Image 1 (cartoon, rainbow, N blue to C red):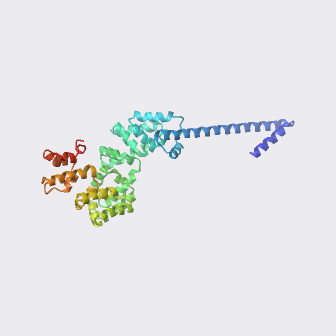
Image 2: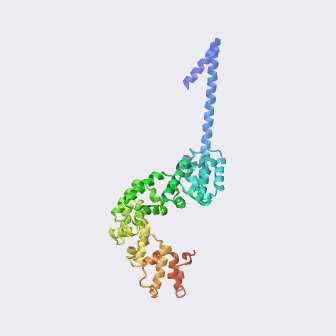
Image 3: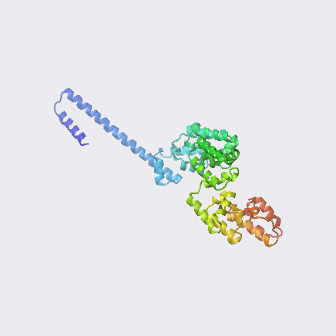
Length: 392
């Protein structure tokens, strides 16, 4: 800056004398250059001010209408730029027009705030039309898109359509492929071809029949889109525990095993041991019903406390390991209370097992154990309240 000022001063001093025509030309050129530089600097400063203002407006909008934290809003606003609410309102109107609820729009924005930079007709509408072309309803399309993490910024031609076609070819059914998407929209956002191909090969090498793999993918799509390394590790552990690859619980065991860390697994094992079960007994229960190690420590504690201290029958867990996954308030306590009353009146058949009592359907339990004796024992309807009836 100092050099610039000195240089300008020298030109001014020089111009105060009677310069030659050449000198006048040089001075004119310098003046024009200086004016252009100053003008450019002013424009840049103005643009920077406008950009910062628009960024601030975007951050304020995300905070006010979508509950963003200040820090996250500022990060997101670096990627989006709009004046006032003109762009946001057009995007929101587009989603509402295509069946998205306010809650679903909020989900979309919170997961993908850059959606405000997309052009609805060019970037958003083709994806919605693709799902409709598959026969997916307007509400289901809105649910699929709002449940996904980044589907709206994925390429329709290079990502979404190829992934769907691969899933359809694997399941050999358009309907089954659609069901998978409804359960797990994220399968369309990843490199499903390479991930699934690797996982299917690993399971086949482990001895799992192809029909079992396809069936498991229909009911639990997340199984086949696990990290291939993670799936191989879980497969090895499950085989070491004595699971049979030809049985359905082999794949369930892999899925349950993928989640807990070693420390979580150890803590859950310690909870079972605290209630008097050996590690061998817990592993036997795990082989029968893998989800018994998928329940939280609190749920395991509460279920076993009721089994041992209220039912006074610790063997129930051996016969019904599912008990740790059932709702204590909606299933275990009401059903056991009904059966205890029937037993005290001599009305419970001697061959009645806890397996039948606890895992049969709500309708079957109500008809067999409540409705059949309600005239004789009206209080059964109080022990098994109306909100638990199968019609509710």
